[in-house]
Length: 393
Ligand code: LMR
Picture 1 (cartoon, rainbow, N blue to C red):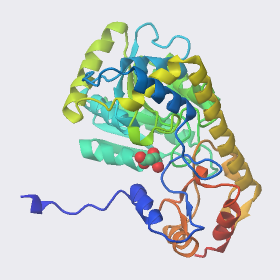
Picture 2 (spheres, protein in one colour):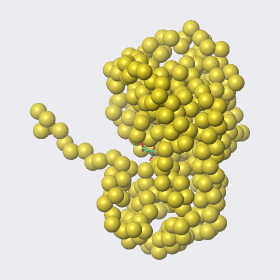
Picture 3 (cartoon, helix red, strand yellow):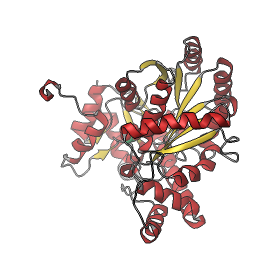
Picture 4 (cartoon, protein in one colour):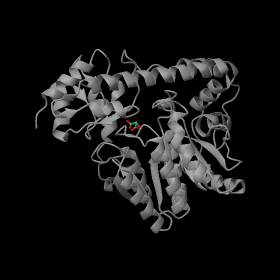
C-alpha cells in the first residue's frame, strides 16, 4: 500500500537550509529561510527569553496536559500588543495557542472551511506554505497580484478580490498584517483604512496573518492595519507567530485569535477550533509559549524584549538603506528596498540567475528571487552586490 505513494519534492525553502550547510565555501551567504541574524551572522536566543526560561526552570512544577487551547496566560499576555487598549473588543476577541504561525494559519483556514468557505483570495506571491496548506485542505485559491508594476501594493487588484469574494457567498480574503512575505511591500495606513472600509461594506471576512509583528516599523505601527480592519468588520480570524519576534523558531509558538460578531459568538467558534486542534495536534508544545508569558509578565524582561526587537528593526533598516544606496546592481534596482518592511525583499531575478548566484557566488536565495535581508551584514553586503552585478541572462 505505501508503495503507492509518489515521492514529493522537498519544500524548496527548507531544502535551501541543507544545501547551504553542505557548501564548503567559507564566504557563502545564506539569504534563504526567514531567520533573523545579527550583524555577526548569529541567531542567538533572546535575552528576555533566556531570563524567562531560567524562571520557568525554577518555578514550573508540572508538565501535565493543558488542553487543546494551550497556555491561555500566553494567549492573553500577547493581546494588548496585538489588539491595543481594548484587547477583547468587549469580549468579542479570544484566542488559543497553536504550534507556530503555521498551526495558526492552518487552524484559521480550516475554521473558515468548516464554516462554509470554499475559496480563499490571496495576494501573490505569498509565503509558499499558504498555498500548500490550502491545497492540502482542498480549499480553492484565487490569486490576485499583491504588487503593482510601480512596486507599491496593488490596491486595484485587492479591491477586485474583495468584490469577487463578496459576490461568491462565503469566500474569504487572506492578507499579511505587516512585513509582507516575500516582497516586503506593505499597505500604507491610508490604504489599510480603505481596506477596512471595503471589508465592512462588502461583508467579507478577513483572515490576517501576522508573522512579523514588531519587525517592520514598531509594535503599534505594525498592527495599524489589523486594528483598523478589526474596528470595521464584524468578524475576523488572526494567525499570529512568535517565531521571529521572540526568536522561538523551533519551539513552535503561535496563536489563533477569533473575533466574533458578539461576545456570545466566541465560544462556538473556539469550540470548533479546539476540536480541529485536537484532531490535528491535540495540544501545542508548551515551553516556548510559557517563556513568552513569563517574559511579558515581568516588566524587566518585557523591556528587554522590546529593546531587542528595536535592535532587530534598526539592523534590518540599516541593511535595507545600504542596499538602496547602492542604486542598481547589474540589472537589479535595489532602491525599492528602502520603502519596504521586514525581513524580505523579492528581487527581479530569474530562476537561472538564482542558480548562478548560488553556484558561482555561494549566495543562497529562494528560487522566487526572495532574499532574507537579515542574512546580509556589513561584511558580506559588498560581495552580495558584486555577485548581483556579475550575474548574466
Ligand atoms: C520563511 O518564509 O522563510 C519562514 O516563514 C520560514 C518558513 O516556515 O517558511
